Length: 165
Image 1 (cartoon, rainbow, N blue to C red):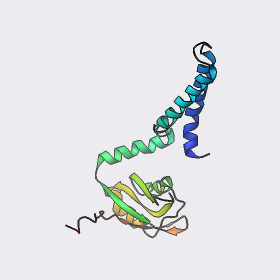
Image 2: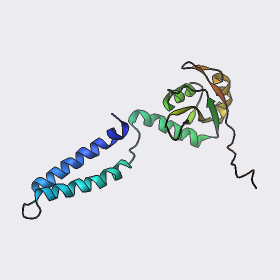
Image 3: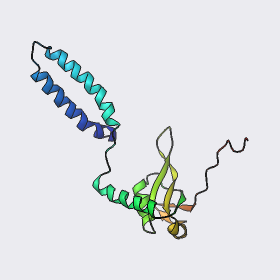
Image 4: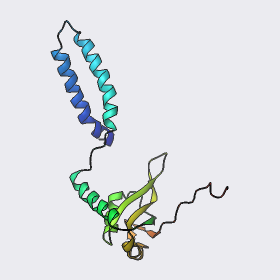
């Protein structure tokens, strides 16, 4: 089941039940049941996309990691590491677990192709500044899911407009 369907299914079912109840209990002389049903479906068609934009809080298992990350971000300086030659099947959680073995991880961002949505094989891991060098030494040239990782401190992104002025 796709994630968007999994997210929208509870809202869709709840709205379908509401529409059914409204259509059942509306007096016959106010609206015909077919008209009430049509109005309910139109309202549901408007409300479902609005409710889909609502992003619930992370699940209980993920919230523990999230709370740790907030503390790490507030407690001190951070450094951003570039991680290259990642396996395409690796996800943020797997990379986070690998780096957390060597220190505090604040954030993981794996880059995706904008058109296809597929991972591009590299990403950035924001870590505690005091753990950055240790992570680079330990994980650079480390074998991860059949690929040899390249880990180094990320360089600042240079805007193309800077060279034109």
